[in-house]
Amino acid sequence: MPPKPKITKDMVIDAAFAIARDTGAEQINARTVSERLHCSTQPVMYHFATIEELKKTVYAKADQYHTEHLMNLTGSKEDVLMEIGLNYIRFAVKEPHLFRFLFQSGYAAANSLLEMIDSEELAPVLLAMQEAMHMSLAQTKEIFITLSMFVHGYASIIANNSLEYDEELIKRHLERVYKGAILTAQEGNRT
Image (cartoon, rainbow, N blue to C red; front, side):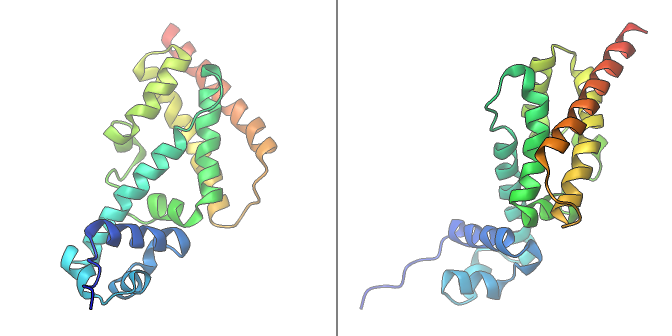
């Protein structure tokens, strides 16, 4: 009789990530992960002492997945602000369970936008924005804060099924907000 296949730590993480995507991170437990892997709960608990530890690991994987989604930029450098904002909202449309896990579950390492602005995870987004706008990092951060409040609001409402996604309307609103944020940052630089 051939030996049973070994359940690896990565297999457990991938199964829990799939559960978070499909039904929500609150559904991650030893039983649901083991069912997805067609094994007992023993391999799950072997790799993770607690389900909380597993959820934190899955959160990190979801955060990386989200960053890759945000940075999938196909337009010109001038459109990077619009594209990042729209990608954020599109993520909420495409992955509502992951969006809620990342931004509405309390698992974020940074508990506020002001803490997040200096996080290592946000650095590639800020760099892309800074290069596109030809502004200082301080100005870029101010613009990001303004845009993120607006974009996160839209995305949250959509992810919680309280608004239908209308990309053209969102583009018009987002364009107004980012033009205003850029003007405000430029004016602040003059004073």
